[in-house]
Image (cartoon, rainbow, N blue to C red; front, side):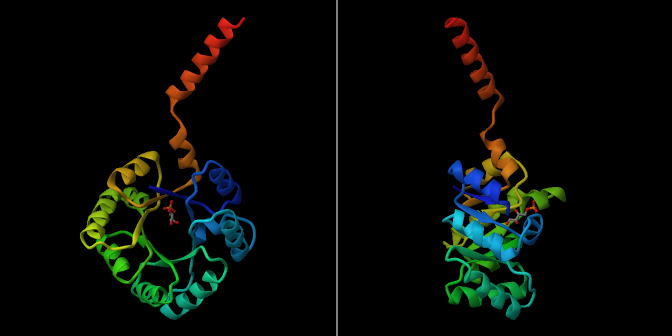
Length: 214
Ligand code: E4P
């Protein structure tokens, strides 16, 4: 499974990249708004650090504006993926962009039929938001399971990015279900590496070593 990092923070991206854990990056307008600097400059900088796909989102809501914005974004770097919201105008834009070989990530997916439409429109990636469903007492990971089945049934090339990840269990379940990608916030990535028995084991080894070598 590929790990993307879900942030626009350069320090976090560099840190995760140095662990070898960044196969790609996803951003959204809220993540960009948290950072200093202009949108395009931030995206350009991310694309210089990371070889894999970097998702940057359009702001327009009608097909024509989305396609125009998408072309500008795609011109920033060869690894740009244009994030398009899951609306009728959005999937029309995805259809046009896929015919022009511009990669797209359909975002804000909350139902399996939205994911089916994203794949049929030619999206490169589909992003189901699991955490936001869990927040409403719906099971986000059940949605991912259904999308994995649908995409397998019809051999769609669209890759599933499990998004809106809140904890390591989301990542584990995504891996067990065979989702292509998990896009992980930096704080969750750090938690994946941690185990109290690892820390306890290191402490015990060092204590024994220091006792024996006195
Ligand atoms: C990913 O593409 C989304 O930008 C992100 O995962 C949304 O996460 P949130 O629900 O924590 O805002």
